Structure formats: structure tokens, C-alpha cells
Image 1 (tube, rainbow, N blue to C red):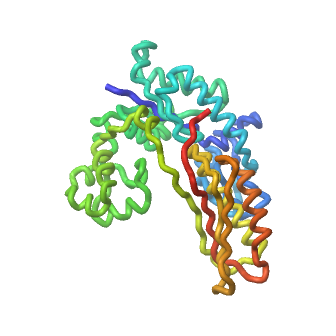
Image 2 (cartoon, rainbow, N blue to C red):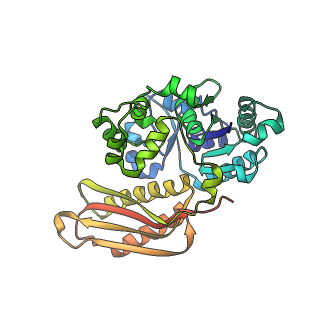
Image 3 (cartoon, rainbow, N blue to C red):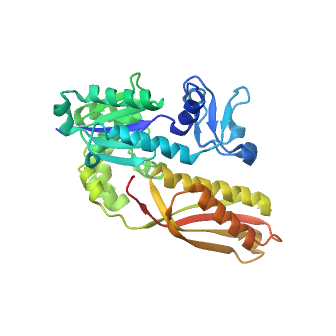
Amino acid sequence: MNIYFCIDLKTFYASVECVMRGLDPFKTNLVVADKTHGRGAICLAVSPKMKIQGVKNRCRLFKIPKNIKYIIAKPRMKTYIKYSVLIHKIYLKYVSKDDLFQYSIDEAFLNVTPYLKLYNKSAYSLAKEIIEDVKKTTGITAVCGIGTNLYLAKVALDIMAKHSKDNIAFLDKDTYKKTLWYHEPLSDFWQIGVKTESKLNKLHLKNMSDIALANEKILYKTFGINAKILIDHAKGIEPCTIKEIKAYKPKTSTISNSQILDKDYDYKQAKIVLEEMINSLSLRLIKENLYTDHIGFIIGYSKDEAPGTKVTKSLDEQTNNTNKITKLLLSEYDYVINTKYKIRRISVFFTNVGKRKFK
């Protein structure tokens, strides 16, 4: 039987900021946001104590209840990456690089199957040792999902471990069916977004049991080849391994972020929104360990007063450096924008996006 770990660093950015200030993330109200953007700035992360009080990641500062006093920490991506690399090296103390896949800046999969016998440990005791090592070395709290495949490890992490007292949870196919088959909403499960959940609900499928027992022809008609993933996951099946993930050579792709503004914005107001959108998309690059060498934006003016403005820039090398990308695109914005007209639509896009080996 194969055993996988999926380890997540709890409220990573906010936890790093607390640790660097000598504060306990579970006793400190802290948000990671750029307050130079005013009360409308997006919180990239909030400390666990803030979450307990109902404050969510990605909210804007003005949405935080006025009775909560908190520290605002400006995002420091280079620092977060350094911590991520340090923790990655901790994992390599326990497994080889071939059995480790860095899923994002704060999350990793480990195939520990061959190491349990080597260390003469149970999966639980090894998971506990690793997350204690992370805590002792960095001050960051790690959470671990244990599963008999990658999917079950991820679900054990997302739905169970993050809410358990010891930050560890286990799932095999039997326990999955017993504990989570009737869990709702479906969007809590890995790889099921809100749109997919909505389509499933329209088919009167509310939980994993419903999907597992559903008419497969209807699922394939609705979701195409992606129905295979839904059906397998509903049954607790995931054939893909870390070895196969590492062997896969992904094609380049495009990621984008678009907004239709709620009203006409002038040049300065739109620039603030553009910067937030660039930062948000750059954060996705970092979080998913992606890189790009071609970036750009499109500006749509109000009521078609003037033709839209499109800018594309090629970079000398692949990067996910937020400061570099932001500085270049904002400079282009200042150069090309028509300040006579109001702005109503903004799109940001990165192309030639792909993975790069973790260093």
C-alpha cells in the first residue's frame, strides 16, 4: 500500500510575518496587505487568530470589522520564497528529491512509502516528526494530510487535518467513504471549483456519493473527459503518482485577470486597480511555482470613446518576480495610456507560463 503526505504551511505569509516579529500567529491579529493602496487593499493572507474571528484571505481592508485591531504587514515575496526553500530542504532530510513534489510555495507532496520501513515508523509518527521539525526550525506551523494516493492525501489535508487538534489526518478509500462521502459542499474537494459544483448541483449531485453512483453517460456528456477525474475522485481513486508528475512536460499556457469596473475610473484610479491585478496574478505564479516571459495588459475606455490600448512585453528570461513584472507594466501604462478618457475595463495576462524545476 502506498502512503503519501500532503503538507501545507498554515496561513504561510501571515505566519512568516508573525515569526519575523517574534509573535505567535495564533495569538496575533495580522494581515498581509499593501496599505499604500488605502482601505481597498487586498489582504493576501490573515493570521489564524484573524480567521477565527471570521476574517478571510483575499478580503479588502475595509471589510475587516472595526472592533478588531490588527497589524498590517507589507508583502515580502522574496522572504516568503526563502522560507519555502528552507522548508523544502527540511523535507529532503526525510525523502529523496524523486519522492518530493513542490505543489506550490506553501504546499508539497511526499511519497513516504519506502521510508516507513526504513525508519521503522508509522505514517502518523513520521508526519508528526516532520511537522515538528518545520516548527522547531522555522517557527511555522505545518499541517499534514496522509492518504493512500495523492488525492486522498490532499483531501485529508484540506477538509480534515486543517481542523484537527494535532494537524494530521488520514484517509484511505474505506475511511473516505465513511467520513466524507456525504460531505457538502462539493467545492471543498480538490479540483472542484464553484462553477463545477454548480453544474453538478444542477444534475442533483450534492456530494461524492451522488457522483459515484450517478449515470456516467450524463457526467461525460456534461464534463467531457474531465468526468473521468470526477468519477475516480468520488470513489477515492487517483492513479497519478509523483513520478508521473515529474516526468510530465507541460505545454506553455496563458493566465489572465480581467475586470469590468463598477464605474468610470480616471487614469490614477485605474492605475491602482491595474497594480492590484498584476500583483494578484504574480502571486498566482509564485503560489503555483509558475514562470512567464511574456506579459501584458489591455485597457478599455468608457463608452468606446477611444480604441482600447493593448501592451505586450517580452522578457529576457522566465520570471515570477512580482516587483519586476509590476514595475515594467506600470511603466508601460504611464507611457501609453490616454489620460483624456475614462477607463472601464482592465485585463492583465501572462503568456508562455510554465513550470520550472524547484531549486
